[in-house]
Length: 240
Image (cartoon, rainbow, N blue to C red):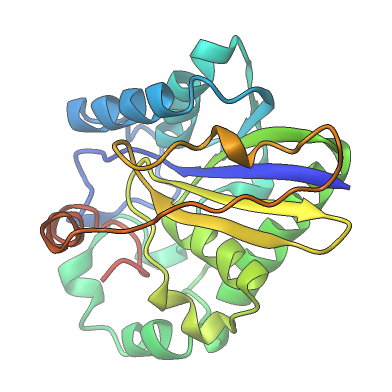
């Protein structure tokens, strides 16, 4: 089996950085979020995707529609990649949530965390990884696009990196960024993490017809860019 899974986080909304939107309906991409999605679409325009899947939340669906448009693909909703069920934390300002006794547990031992009235972090990772394996088996020899959320993508990446869920906060996933997991008969490989428009060429990550092939990329970041990203992309419990 060889499948390249391109994981894209949604673009920003008007609530990004202020409120934990969760699964709340009616939260659309902002103008900035649309621009981010369009830039990512341009970056991925020369990658041949077999299918596009997305969390059924509005902001992920809108991002997926923009990114999938150059490829003429319909967006297929998939609940495996839906936003975390934050329960009572949904629609609560992040400034208030940081004062909650559960917050340091989520930051330091998230494998023990269950959102009040919501989902356990372990369950989020389990359903998302199951979704990756299911779609990877269905798209042997192909590249697919999955648009999801920061905490979900980070949980997926942690699994394929062989990193315990308690360390997943060390992974950074920016709005409209691209991360790639390659599945093959030799085992999985995380080919890149948090790649954004302006970064290196991505087409080399598509499975090769001759067999299983892993490519690599230069993921160098400058300090100014990192600082700007950290200041602007917070909307999940894992984005501090």
